[in-house]
Amino acid sequence: MLRIVQESLTNVLRHAGPGAEVTITLRCDKDVVRVRVVDDGGGRLAGPRPASARDSGGNGLVGMRERVEVSGGSFTAGPRLGAGWQVDAELPVKEPAVRTTG
Image (cartoon, rainbow, N blue to C red; front, side):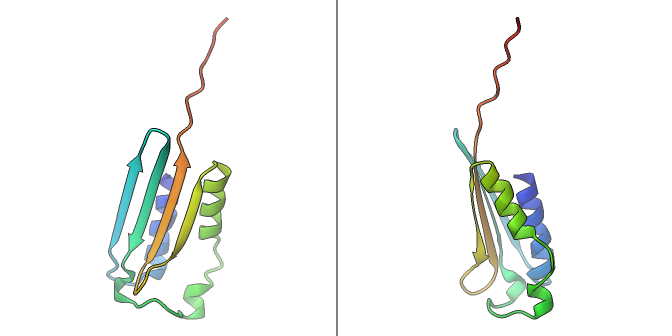
């Protein structure tokens, strides 16, 4: 989850514009951990962006999706209505391995 939040915040810095506000919500249940990272776009309206902002050459969203899905979780990311961006990830909680000695 740390890497999901870290990459989401990096994307906010790169794409949301100056003055953007971010809300991070983390919820831990018995069998799943959920994180949501939402930014307000810094007042910028959703819609077409310059090519330099769209095509950063990075693979942040792809990397986040792969990281979550390989762990059996789910991932969504996209623009919010009006302005801003939202990232949601869920990861299953795995039982700790039981060690036996003998």
